Image 1 (spheres, rainbow, N blue to C red):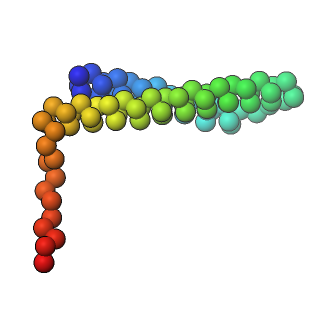
Image 2 (image 1 turned 30 degrees about the vertical axis):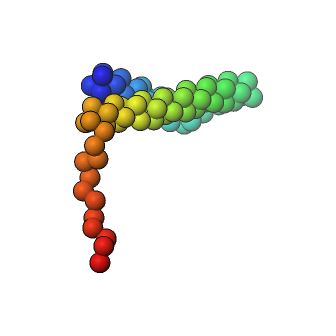
Length: 86
């Protein structure tokens, strides 16, 4: 399960990278009229919403993957605890 989630996360990160590149290219394109400006702004906002959705999905899947890895470790903490009794 963790491997499948990892592959899905990787694919979503690649898609997010593509959207960010598209936004950068769109931002640098010149506009000649108000209609072009409005269309460009609408497309830029749409790409921004899609990027935000992908970031949230990646975050959720990463958390789910970490929980599945932790759960398969038997629920034991792998980090040593420092002794503070001095």
